Amino acid sequence: MLWLKSFHVIFMVSWFAALFYLPRLFVYHCELRDDDTEGHTRFGIMERKLYGIGLVAMIGTWVFAVALLVANPGYFQSGGWLHLKILLALALSGYYGWMKGLIRKFAAKQNTRSHKFYRLINEIPAVLLVAMVILVIVKPF
Image (cartoon, rainbow, N blue to C red; front, side, top):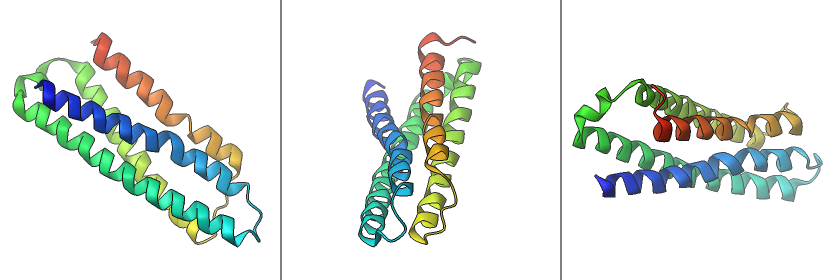
C-alpha cells in the first residue's frame, strides 16, 4: 500500500506542476504581438510538450488511485471525504482536457481571451489542491 500511495503522490505532484504552469504559459502567449511568429511557435511547442508530460502524470495519478482502491476495496467506504476528493479529481481532469482545447486555439491563432482570463483560471488548480489536501488529511466527513 505504501508503494502505491507513494507513486500516486509522485504522479499527482507532477500533474499539478503542469496544471500550475500551463495557464501561466497562456498568459505569456497572449501577451505576444500578433506578428511575433517565432514567439507563437515557441510557446506552442512549450504548451504541447508540457501538456503531454502533464497528461502522463494525470494518467499515472489515476492508475495509482484505482490501484489503491483495488488493493483495499474497503477504503472506498471510508467516508464522504473520499467521494468528494474523487469528484474534485474528475473535475480537475475535465479542466485539464479543456486546456488541450485552449492549446489548439492558440495554435490556430484563434485565442480570444485576455491574459487576465488566464491569470484567473490559473487559480483553479490551487483551490482544488487545497480542498483535496484538506479532504485527505483532515477527513472532515
